[in-house]
Image 1 (cartoon, helix red, strand yellow):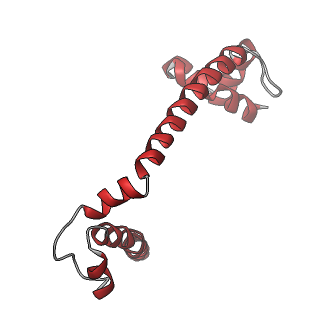
Image 2 (cartoon, rainbow, N blue to C red):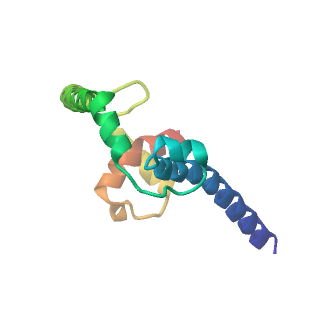
Length: 140
């Protein structure tokens, strides 16, 4: 009974939060199709005529197009630079031992001690490589 009440309260809270977050975005979306006169006459109603004139005016007169292409340029150049520098850093750090790490040959006995009678050969190799440091830290 308590579990059902807890789930119901959680669902109500998330539903109310979702409505609080989504409603302003929906209102902003349909309001952007209104003319200025319609907006000042009744801000909460749907537009009488769905018009793209606001978007065209913003693109041309406010130079949104220039800002858009500037954002694209900055995003793409930053992504390329991050991938390049990140791959160089990974190549440098790959295989290096850091503070708190121990060589792989010393980790395997710790894994066997932690898992006891568990057959370590059942663990996928990737999973062993990813979690061996954490398991070794708990074993010490």
